[in-house]
Length: 225
Image 1: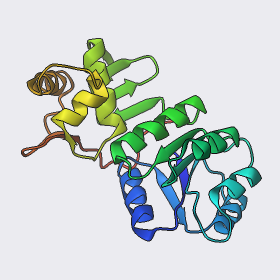
Image 2: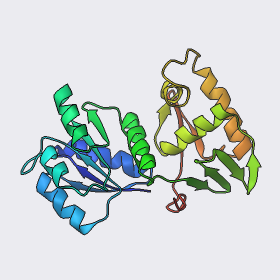
Image 3: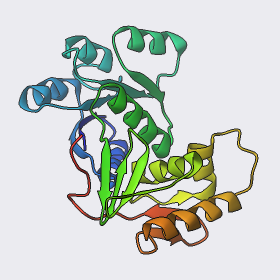
């Protein structure tokens, strides 16, 4: 998974982002001012930087102007004016997210940027199941398992947000799209099929009165990119 630098001066938000990103397997380093960002990029090779604008010492715009061009960057900021978004993107940011934000949306934006930069994971392995996310193929004990395109989208959504409880409605949004007009029982039907085909009865957990969570506690579940 990715090494991500979180530059956010509000400690509670910084900690919340770190906790959620580490749940899905990323490694995070946290800083709270602009000068610390420049220090950390000299010490580590980051796959992504999450950058607030309003920070002490150097603001996010000043930091981005000094960053190497090869480090993908996402602004996360309370400044939602169009002129600020335009400025951030023109300076070279890969995305711009306005606070308050949904953590699941942030996860999706991060994955999108990592994929575009060639730094996302291509394979996910859990016990005897291997998922090739690029070719959209799923293998159990190295035997190809047949899935419909919609079933694979649901599997991919669960992998991208593993260890996080997702409501049925949120899964509909991610895997089916915001304009899907069906009811949440559609999710239950697809989850049942996935569990049966992959033997995921013990790892694809039902979260009472909410939805589902793909539980992956293995430190080595993610293979090379």
